[in-house]
Length: 357
Ligand code: KG4
Ligand code: ZN
Image (cartoon, rainbow, N blue to C red; front, side, top):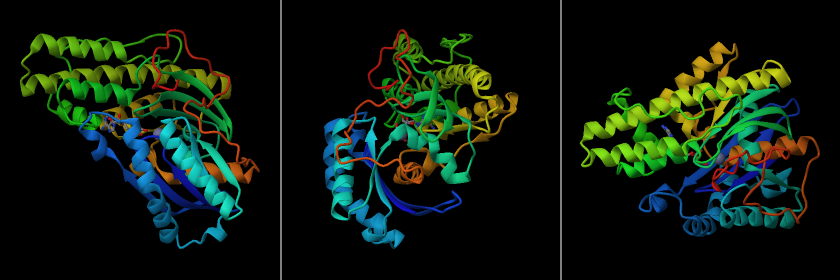
């Protein structure tokens, strides 16, 4: 089975061709990603209108490259998959419409993939992981703990009540005048800082649910930075180190609870899987390692190029759905919001529109 996957939900324009063999093994034939970071950097964040226009300009060429690199003709495709949400609606429309056009012209099935489902199924692409497993997804738009029980069977165990974790890193970077995207900058600055200089709050610590909250912590950093003005380089490092230490402790606590909730409902997870840009953070990775070890499970973090947004994960999710006969019609709508767990409700106190709870 050969599937073309298209991803345009945020600021990456991406396309890939993935092969799924009859035994469920995967082979990535091409995976082309064009990040728009430079276009958005001077605004300190993703500008939806700029992203949508860039997707329009770039997508045809990227799809063409993915097909050429894979050495595959359109007539050989078993399906065309596109991320149909959740995400910035302008970009989603560009990707989904392109996929529909290809499907129509070449008389190929269309698969409208949930972007979060694609993140959730990535470890089955990279290492054929069996269900059930626990996913920790932390990116610029999402912070969730999800029980991945089967294809199409996802139970959200925890989510953020306000900012996404990557968003919190980006906002802290911005208030300290560090460049965008802020996550790697904050990590770099934190490496030379004192994590004990500022006693920032550890949000949600000890709560029986597995939800996150990051906006209060972000505000505490802003207040402290304001008090210290003008900031010396060492102040910035200490603020970053103290912020990151608070995020680490909160993450370890929330995931420990999340894994306990998982165990109660689904038994021992085959693994704890981390995905999303924040999983690139070395301190967070080692905190996750400890959490997994304590819960007697294995930590799996797909390679960085498959942890962040890409077309291969969309193609793979499409292939998994196709294998179960789950295809879509030309009426499949683009969706700004699309819950992975249809039964999940917005948690009490939920305040943010970007987090996509
Ligand atoms: O998954 P991703 O590439 O894109 C989406 O948001 O969909 O995640 C990007 C996010 C940004 O907020 C970025 O600041 C954060 O991941 N990030 C990090 C690190 N590298 C990227 N956050 C903390 N530490 C890092 N090293
Ligand atoms: Zn993503």
